Length: 245
Image (tube, rainbow, N blue to C red; front, side):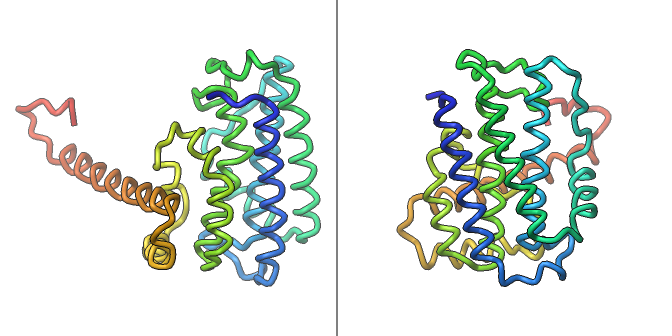
């Protein structure tokens, strides 16, 4: 089922609420001792603000048929934004987040129902417009909150956000558990694996958590398969065809 603009706005409002709760829950952290490999909660909010604002500007440009320069290397861009935002005061980061959310909601309502299913817009992802709106308005920001709660062992908060966002995560991913793989995050020394194992022992009857564990397993399988493919390519005999590898 394709969500309408009212549903998309509802999910953005939920993201807004979750981020405000995130600030309250994590405000005892020392945001001055973070690094790019280990973000503080303030770094997370600044990162989300950057991408929500970027997405709003892109959607506004597309709607008005104005050329827009997309990001060529998102990892490089993330590092550059992190460096710029690192020394900002929390109240400034919070204020910028509020402005970004407000603009994002204002921009998406300029699109009509028939446009939500378009998949040929210059979004940079080759996905339907509604999925792009949900990605930057819900799954991406809430994914960061989940990861941070996991990292800090704030398991009750992790479960709460996971339960509240499960429907939109499944809708976005067509029910694919890979949406919970945390594949894009820094995972030093197997932290995600260890935390999820701790969680599963405490909440072994939670159906959504089982999906998270399944997503993590799928990620490990993908990495193993990629390693095998890379190895086969490296030692590919010239007398054979490995085009299917």
